[in-house]
Every structure is written in structure tokens, then in C-alpha cells.
Length: 175
Image (spheres, rainbow, N blue to C red):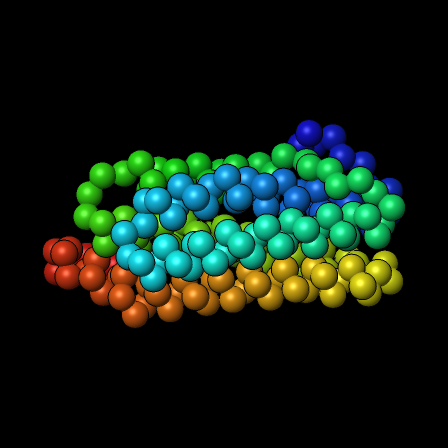
């Protein structure tokens, strides 16, 4: 539960970070199918589908990291991801222009990616400080995938979605 963790050493902090990420990834596994269903552009649907597969692999890598620490994979509710996904749900449930909805979905997904980038960067750095180089490499793989997902979302937004959303918006709407 939030606020009840105990950090006597870096390993405690590291395991807490892993539990947070593990829960965040499970929340994302539940959220991505809804985003796939709601997206209008095929290219955006494909980015979400691809990241759903990557997320499954990320969960498996986290489980491997836990095992190599001698720990059972365990989740600590990631309140930040809960909030980010709740904001994404608002876009999923919104009515309006499909291109604008897609732009909103991209924004929501990028907020999630940026949170994960921060979390995996922290966990990887802690693993290195603790001398867990194999674990650091696994966490770096997840970090790289999150960064690539963010870049793909930016590419879809810039190449098509935001352009089409702006075409349906009043001049100066700033999409």
C-alpha cells in the first residue's frame, strides 16, 4: 500500500520499483485492447497491437528479474498508472471526431510511455548500483521498447493523425 513501504537499503527500493512496474504493466495489458478497439486509424491500431505484444514480453522479463533476485513476482498497486489509465478511459469514452479521438489516445498513450521510461530508467540504474548487470540488461530492453513505442506514437501523430484532426478543427485550434 502506498506510504507503507520500508527502504532500509537500495535493494528494498529496487524491489519496490519492480513491484510498481510489474503492476503498471498488468494495468497496461488490460487497457491496450480498449485503445485498439477505440482507435480509428489502422496505423495507430497496429502501434497499439504491437505494443500489447511487447508488453507481454516486458512482463515476462520482469518475472525473470524477480526470479534472479530470489523473489516471487509481486505487484504493488501503481497509483500513477491507475491515474494515467483513468485519463485514457476518458478519451476512450468520449464522443466526437474520430481523428481528434485518435490524437487524444496518442497523448494518453505517450503519458503512459513517459511514466514507464522514468520507472525503467530508475530500476535499471538501481540494478547497476547493486551489481545486478544481467537484470539491468533485461530492464534496459524494456526501457528501449518503451522509448521506441513513444517514437512510433509521435510518428503516427505527426504523419497523419494530428494533421487530419486539425483539418476538422477550427483554425488555430492548436492540435
